[in-house]
Length: 427
Ligand code: GLV
Ligand code: MN
Ligand code: MN
Ligand code: MN
Image (tube, protein in one colour):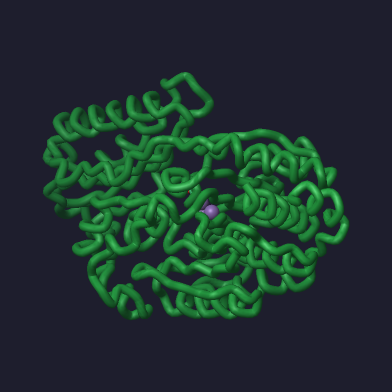
């Protein structure tokens, strides 16, 4: 049956690219920063508006909608055997400050479009199909990446932590979630997925790197997702007057942070592998006045690798450096917290096969590749056979306003996704 579907109807897979492009543009208008940049922070007014926009599109696609207590949104197309584990797809629509229109968005709007594509072709699923919009894949507001999918995957520690988590303005996760209409019940363990819920999960995403574009390949088939980690460090010193306190009397927390940032780069480079990366994306000084010696410095470090051990080794070295710097400079380490230290994830052979055969039916070139960025798929892999479809993006740009993917590349991704879902629905 699936074979028949694939060979006979691949020509009738019609993507409404005009509409999809318009949806991407419309969604980007729900932003806290000016176009072309997008800033959409968890549970902000714009996030809530964007959620309504997505739910309307899900309803238009004939999906039945459910939301859990942190606002993961599920749109279901009931299959002919609704008691079987469903096949799911989806991504996120939250956007880090001053980012672009496509990260995550292509995997949510593209998934809804894939449902339309299948519907138009006359396909009827056997296993139910579900589109998921995950809450807060980005760590922007509460410092926790893949918040929604991490919980779905059953993170007991996160369910507990969320009861006390606050943002930079001291607004608790609970209050923020409530203001967006969620967290009616404070027990977040009700978000955890049952092991039988999904047989497979597939995420469509822009590559966020330059390989597909450089090599002129249409589709990336992700075989593994690199292991991410993040660390928060806070140094404390005496501060004081920038003119009056002479250099030998200082213990400048800001300089300790600056040294640590350089140490991160050094340890990452010393790993000897091009696959090891480290970034200090947040460095804040207190009180933040030109004529005041920093009495506090807050550093956030992101480090990743396809090799978990090597990444953990970098974390260890960063810790040793923090201790050494604090001793030598006479500053205190007020906090050294490993926020997350996640293992990598592997795509499932069955999903890889389904994605590959979809590209073959559609006559699209493909390339197997590793995802260096993390995605909700990293956590969904714990609950279902996982796979990811990458499409090219302009110069590999991502997490900046210049991010772009062409309507043609997006349409290719949507078709591959549609065929993959169809195939897995009969698996
Ligand atoms: C996700 O946005 C990542 O930082 O990889
Ligand atoms: Mn992102
Ligand atoms: Mn993303
Ligand atoms: Mn991401």
